Length: 116
Image 1 (cartoon, rainbow, N blue to C red):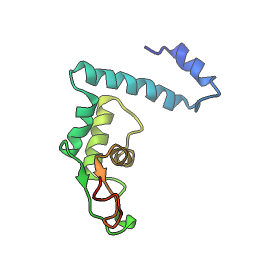
Image 2 (spheres, rainbow, N blue to C red):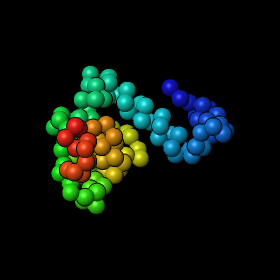
Image 3 (spheres, one colour):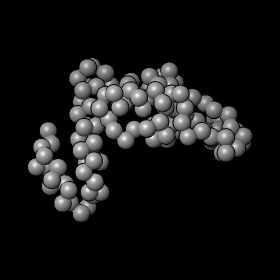
C-alpha cells in the first residue's frame, strides 16, 4: 500500500539506508510475499520447496570447501525474482538457506555438525 509519497518520506528518513532502489524493492517484496500468501501458499512452504522440504547436510572437511551458492539457491533466486523479489541472487539465497537451517555447512569436525 506504499505510495510514491511514502517512498519520498522514507528517502528523507536518516534512520534507514536511503537508497531508492532498495526502498522500492522492499515495497515490491512485501507485495510479492502477499501474492504468495493470496495463492494459499505459506512463504515457509514456498522457500522449503528448494531443499526438498528437509535440511541439506553437507560434509565439508574445511570451511574452504563451502560453496557460495548451489543449484537449490540458484533455483530459489530464479523463482523469487520471477515472483517480484529483487536483490535475491544465488549467493544471498544460499546465505539465507544457511541462516534458516536449510543447509548445514558446519565442518564435520565441528561440535555442532551432528547437533544440526
